[in-house]
Length: 88
Image (tube, rainbow, N blue to C red; front, side, top):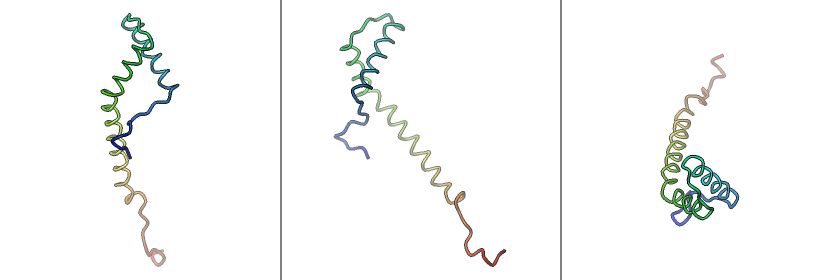
């Protein structure tokens, strides 16, 4: 359960470093923009604060829908007839 005072997505140091490297490479190769670690990290921080919640919320909604569909189907797929001994 997510609490209001906690980050939704908490990145470990190595993962954040990999993402900063990916941002720098993208900016350089796709946009011909040379960016250092600081600029790439600031951009990542912006993405994480402002844009990532959109993707996170969509993923939570999709997972919720999936689990609700599976739970709704449990009775049909897991139902066992009762008192079947005499019906053989």
